[in-house]
Length: 91
Ligand SMILES: [Zn+2]
Ligand SMILES: [Zn+2]
Image 1: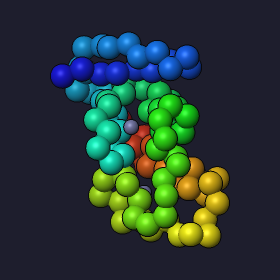
Image 2: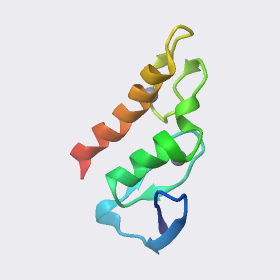
Image 3: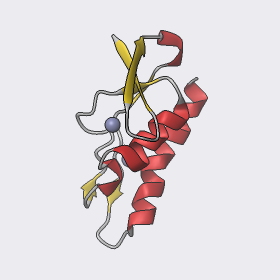
């Protein structure tokens, strides 16, 4: 198993898996795992199109949140970011 860490330029470096500090991205079918919270957050909010979730059920696994039509992009972003923040307590 490997851990991916993206830097601000979008480059990905691969590290040996470290079970104590693994932060998996649980968005849809994404299977990336990060070792640092800020990397996961950056990945979610800037790297991929994760924050561009459409309306309907939140793609985050095990999340039952419904994204409503009248939610603006910032609110959706805030919701996606809340998943990362809640992971903090598990480290
Ligand atoms: Zn992802
Ligand atoms: Zn969600």
